[in-house]
Image: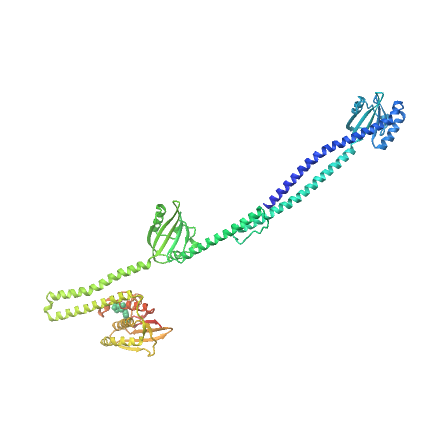
Length: 586
Ligand code: ADP
């Protein structure tokens, strides 16, 4: 562009100068040429008069002899051809030619005019001279009678030469002026195009995103104003972009730290945005789904139907569905249209992961079902035996004693069950506010063994201990810990055959106090190990019931450990025995 402006300006200037100089030159040349020719003509006439005066006496006397010689002398001296013609047209003297060979000159235009008594002149091609020539002729009169014609001729080469010189001067003038014009216009164009070039270069860099660019122009003219305007615009743009960027970053940060998945679709269902959580939920990456139809990642038919419904009805809808890949999740989707000027611009889908909520709900309903079932069994037994007794069995002493024994046992079971349930619910209720104090775990373990000693003896089970005296105290709730210990030791005794062994130990390891309950009992099959901490889960229902189990003991222990930021884990082999470990942070 800069080149074009420069060329255009130079060319315009050149044309202007050239045309004006040419017009001026021609306008000057024309009158100059006329003036010049007239001047020569006048001079020629004057000379003709002089020559006429010199020739006069000879003509009057009709002494033509010396005229030719005189003509040659004079012609030589004034550098002009002189011809003397008698009125009959005969040439009697000529400075340049032999008069004997010359034809009659009466027919020449200038001679004709002179013969008519006027001053004759003509410019024509001279066959004798082989050149354009100017002729002037005057009559030589005596007493009003024309005696002869005196003619002077000047070859136009001289005139042409002078005119050529004049034209050359003019041409040189035009050339010089044009050159100056070119130089001046180039210089001028440069002063205009250079700042434009600077502005356009910088503007290009700015449009390529380099907002640090500034235009430095010192000129106070319109270009200076333009540069200042561009600088202001860039600064405003930079500010605006910074704000947009930071608000985009804020939005991205919010989206990516949300626990919900977010998916943004165009009104045609093309994915325009996905946050980190949605990437996780659908096992994908932003770069793989951007610009693609949503059906690629949302394969659930019901959900697709709802999305289409949102597009059609411009209303918010929700849909609950489960995913299989990359993991099994229950998701609740809220699909909302973003409407602008009555048209759907985008669709935002927010996914809430309600997997654990649904699992919890299931656990709760399962728990209620299990608890009612567990409670009904002893109640049914009590009711059944009581009815049988009332129906007459009361009369037989043996039956009566046996049935009342059963009723007593079932009532005990009911009490245990209710106690365990109450423990569990109070543990859940007190999740955050249990009272803790420095607790001597060694002493607790010893008390626990003492309280279950009789039960162990009944089963002929020997309890050994490995509890160091200098155990550090643990910040814990002693009642809860005691309950956990009793549950574990009780299990160890219950699930160990008569004559077996149980070992209770404690040891400090890596910032933890580790407590173990090891038995030589029946052991737990590998496939049941992950489930024994669930409520009401029992490996062998009949055996558990036989030994007075409720299926809640281990889940109570697990709860207690969680509230002490501790862990419980188990190693077991069927037929050989089990070891339960508790770890408590010191
Ligand atoms: P329960 O009241 O039935 O004992 P728990 O929650 O205490 O309920 O234990 C769940 C199940 O784990 C028991 O029914 C039993 O099958 C198994 N179990 C627990 N402790 C032991 C153990 N020391 N040896 C073998 N099996 C055990």
